[in-house]
Image 1 (cartoon, one colour):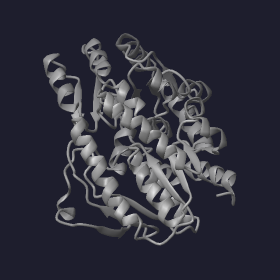
Image 2 (cartoon, rainbow, N blue to C red):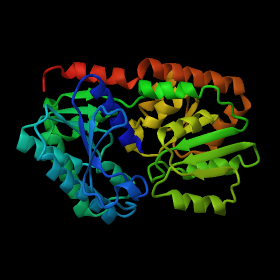
Image 3 (tube, rainbow, N blue to C red):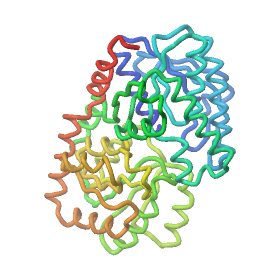
Image 4 (cartoon, rainbow, N blue to C red):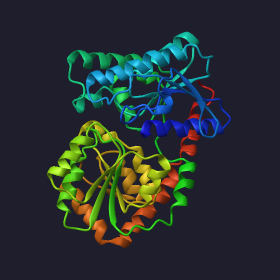
Length: 390
């Protein structure tokens, strides 16, 4: 579960389907609540195949916890870094290694591979760290901030190339690191796989009787989901219902806030596996893509955006910046000011009162994603740029 896991479970399978031999090193399952499933407990290492037996997965033990404090997060990241590094250096040499970050501690695994095996490294940059942790108040110690910036520079410097989940990261890299002028960067955005589309098409006949507003994913500081609760409060006298699917550090606080506001029109639902989640999206009326109001997130293009649109659902995006051009080009939704609960509530009400427009916008977004954001095609394009130049 989680955006990072979905990104690379898809891309790893696609690489394998294209005839490449793929090995993934990852943690033993414990996301998002830090609880290890019974079948993985008391196991040091687990080597298995993915569900289609197309690539190898090496799961390593970590200090699994809720990651609510800086100490817990660092402990979790360091435990993976140490164990994954010890496993990686015992593996045969690979033609190249993709290091997906954050957390940047995964980059240390790449350094070990590069030094011990002379393996070229591609950094897959999904988010900017430590910048995001500083903005969200997760990293406050001057010592830890300095260490984070040192680690960022160290990891980026060893990379041979970069995959960028957000094209706007290119400006940040070049403005902050002089050595980036010599580093090739390739866009590898999030999107949806052909397998995802096939799964979506199975549920096309779903008919919703209630008007349902859905958010799914991490319930953390970056999402600013308090705004959603405030919008639900403003709409409490309308037959409009909210579903928040997922878990994270802020879930208990938001559930408490919901009780204090006496909201009867909102429901919190535990994380769901992909096929169940697709069914939930298909059963909703519109979907939300919120983030907190910060300059750092002006470059954000959350992966859930494409999943919602692929399900032919209108999106209300509480983000400014690059994502606005996607929404404008696709006519797949509306962007509102981040953390503006009045604008969010009014936009939800507009969709509720205009059923034909809601359906038209959803279909427009779905067609756009199918044309421009299929993962197989996105990966083909990135690999074609790389060619034999590693």
